[in-house]
Amino acid sequence: MCLRALRRRVFSCRCRPVRRRYCSGRESVSEWWEQPLEALNTEQWEALCDGCARCCLHKLEDQDTGDIFFTRIRCRYLNENRCSCTRYSERTRLVPECIELTPTNSAALEWLPPTCAYRLRARGEPLPEWHPLRTGDPQSVHAAGISIRGRAISEEHVHPQGYDEHIIHWVE
Image (cartoon, rainbow, N blue to C red; front, side, top):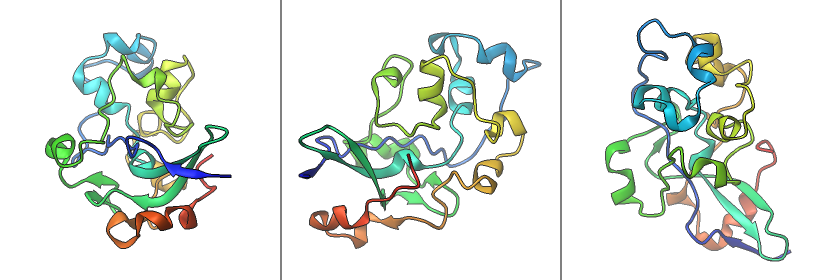
């Protein structure tokens, strides 16, 4: 197996520094969950992020098969304890490879974790039971063991040639 870093050093920071309310006005999750992604307002779009920070992990791609492997190496700007980006508003300038998810590109991003609400929504699948939108608790993603909290290391501490030594299997 010949591994290489994905061309765009693929990760997408959806890890906002501060969580906002999950629903605007009197809407319930089910009322806007059924809407097409393109119909969501900014607050609803941001609320889809569960805060797991798995998208901020570096990934490797097998050159022969195209299989994607997650590593435990995280973006240098990610606060691992909070699972949020410390430079969210500047992330695409500081890390040009950081891909901003939009309703138009989320369906095509197969490297997103299988639990990612953006990926699930693009496929018409429901949110997992532990998702903060369903539980009303932003800590539920951590309690369910989905987040990277306590399981990642900063890219600053790993030589790029050593990324393959950090492949993980807890992101399927």
